[in-house]
Length: 442
Image: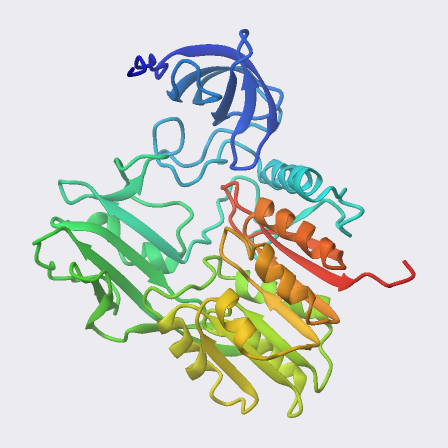
């Protein structure tokens, strides 16, 4: 017997009191009937009218936008971007909060995830509860940090470049992204006709003048003649295999961090905030305190940012093994680290490559896994290696907290945790946790 379709509640409005912020950037509220709402564009303590954007009768929760504020929080400000707000650009979800409030809310999310998934208070995690701004983001009141050095523009059917709306394929055409770095803005992507394109990614390297655009044509479309205001490399996404191929200029940009230049190929990963790489390297090295002659692992190593920083500090008798799944990233890492005789980069998934290495003991480990985290199996292997210290770089506090619990099961505890606001105006946050083995008599 086929179940009867449930009635959609999209468009229904509820007047609600806004509760705490939750993982994912929305706030939690309940209707008078007890239905849970995940509300965007609201702040804790406010009373708002929330309009349902997703959900149906009988659903465990509904998604909603705050479309009218009845009682505003003292932390609320008018969003500086004209494209922010309900139903508009899906990028900056916290433009309606003061910068200090944004960082405080991020801290609340980290604390809640640590408690819920790892059973730790901030004090037990060695964290003072603060989220630090990146260097250079301490701006006068009202100024918006222009931090985004990589922007993925979507293109509408009329050829206008814009950004996608929240949880939607619809494009919000824009004249300028306020958080885009000056090197992105000067390319003038938003001013040009991109008919035939599905997407245009713009990259402005930090520490060099390298600029790149990556074009993704619609099926059967021809590439446009790209004439931008600055010298730029042009790449395209192939329709056949999804690979990225060179059209004009270099197939990479040069990024500067930790006193060294890194080649980053098109499609490769590099931190988006211009100060993020230096901020994270500093936090990791301060936490690990590498010694001459140490043996270290750099897992999910990308183009070799942490592997190079470790190699610089371990001396001629030290050694670093990096593991990375991306073929192009491995090529870049090997190029970037060619000057270090005792650095080796292996390609493949960490959980597959690490057991094959035969390594049974290391001194230091750095892991910077994708958003899903490292997972139980990988953590179990890492705890068997007896590392003196482990640095875990995390872009998702929930994944970090889950993996911390696995590390605890393997005999490690968090010694210190630091959090950084490397994504201003959004709910995203970066953490660096330093773990050490629990002493037998502790």
